[in-house]
Length: 197
Image 1 (cartoon, rainbow, N blue to C red):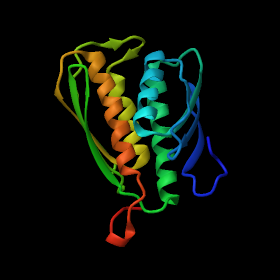
Image 2 (image 1 turned 90 degrees about the vertical axis):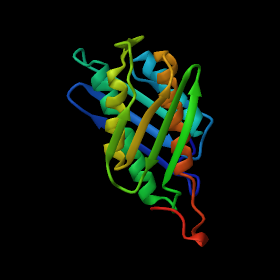
Image 3 (image 1 turned 60 degrees about the vertical axis):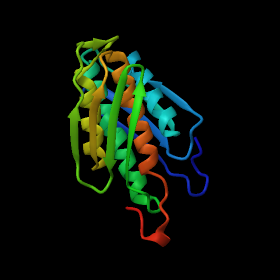
Image 4 (image 1 turned 135 degrees about the vertical axis):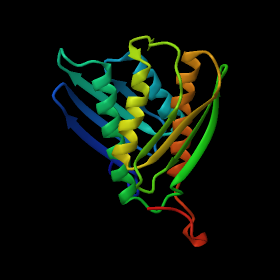
């Protein structure tokens, strides 16, 4: 991480709930490091997909008690992810503020769009067939992005366009979010009146 370098869009945040303790680090202008350990291995893989697609540095560690499950972990990480984004964008130069991406993964095709203007909302049209992918309940993918959208005060939308394989679909969800995040957080050209704070 490049904390301390000038003009780096960086946030470090901790969140403690009844069952989890999350330490979260993000650098929007990084792109070379991703160190995540949440206790949910499939979720760790998907966070790597976000980091690669968004070209960010990402660090996430989660400590849990014996009562924590993947729902609590994904919800709490999503919330601190969103709050960290909001903090960075409040202090950042004007950014484009909105973005979208259509991303394939195997047979799946997924649309994601975001607006960081401050209207918290999640639009979700991603039906999974399976209840679990590895150690992660598929219903908690929505839980993660719902917490992220409300933490970031962002309008975030996902729509499945095609595909039958749930693993491919899940990868497309996280990759499309990464691509969309990258597009929305680029510094805007203010000479043309573009961008949002």
